[in-house]
Each structure stands twice: as structure tokens, then as C-alpha cells.
Image (cartoon, rainbow, N blue to C red; front, top):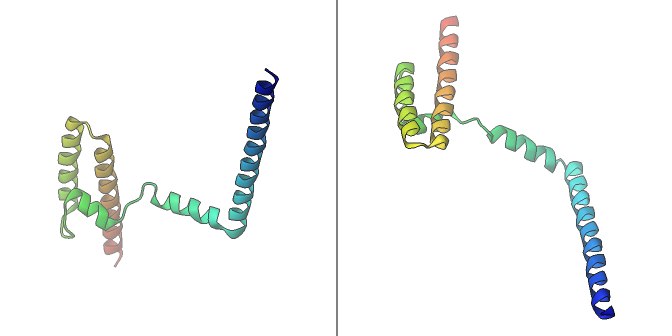
Length: 117
């Protein structure tokens, strides 16, 4: 009985010491990452990639070439969005939506610059 208690106490104490060591190592790693700038760079990369897509990716998602008009973008968007709504793919719907947003921004930016020249 005493041996069992002793082993249980050793296990509990050992796991507590190990847990504290892991936490200290984690904090030290975070501190080092902050000093070297790795943490900030990682956060910037995550933010940069979190929802934005390039014009080329948007065209690939919608299956359109560079000569497509804004009306063709909207037509293709409506078709793909509805198709994915019926089949229940929210992920694809969101990709199609992001692609349309990206291309709309490109077309609006281009139409604004063409009007000023």
C-alpha cells in the first residue's frame, strides 16, 4: 500500500515538474520568436493569405480568361454559386464569392484608371 502511494506521488510530482518545464520552454520559444521577428512575420503571412486571392487565381476559379467582361464574371459567378448551393459545398461557394469580389475590384480599379487618362 505504501509503495503504491509512493509511486502515485512520484508520478504526480513528475508530471507537475514536466508540465512546468514544457510551459517554460514554450514561453522561452515565444520570447525568442518575438526577439527575432519570426512571430510578427508569421502573423503578417497569415493575414496576407487569409482571404485574399490573386487575379489569376480568381480567373482560374471562375474559369475565365483575361478577356472576360465584368458581365461574364457575374454570369459565371451566379451559375457556379447556385450550382454549389444545390450541392451543398459552402467551401466552393466561398471560393467563388472571393473570386468574384477580386475580379470586381480589378474591373472597378481598371475602369477608374482608364477614365482619368
